[in-house]
Length: 226
Image (cartoon, rainbow, N blue to C red; front, side, top):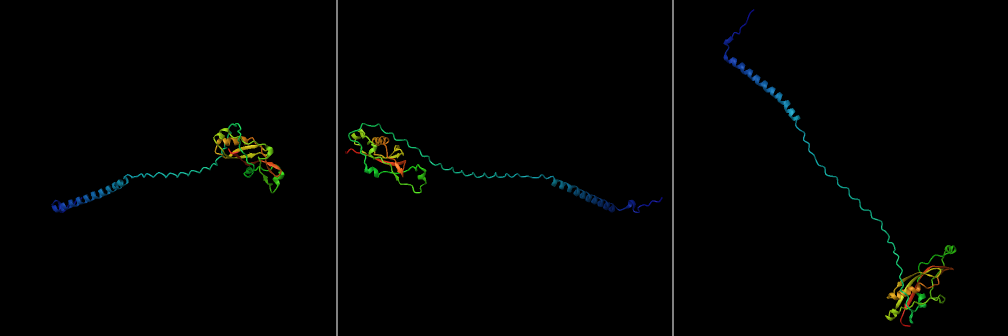
């Protein structure tokens, strides 16, 4: 067995030994630096992955309220006619020597015809041209309708005037309704006229040969001059 010895041996210069040490130290430092870089990169990535996710809540505005439906107009209600209470006649007073006058010719001129009842027979209903209607009468001599009594108190107080009454005459000649059309201005005179005319008999209106119901105006004059 042969054994080679370094010719330099322990006699190698000191500068060579220092260079090898320096080179080894530099290499070691480079290795540590590379290892540190490789070790730090995953940590940076991990830190990026571990960053918490920030979530912000946005409050939504409440939905706008629905517009209120317009109120439906209520159908107009037709006013109902209120029947007027009948006018109560004052108690009949004792007839005085001076009584109310009932004009004959003027009464016929002031007759008013409204609401003529239809004809009673089917033959008249079938007629194309209806017959002329003759208005009711209250001045026939055979009716014997008494004039209204002049109230004694009205006579003493000088009350006088003209009353117009609307009378609905039935086909049988009776006064079904008596209404005050125009007042005399004195309640006592109006009531005396109403009380008397309610008891009167009339000649009914006629349409052709049939008696029909109709309205007529009756004038009553209260005068202190006889």
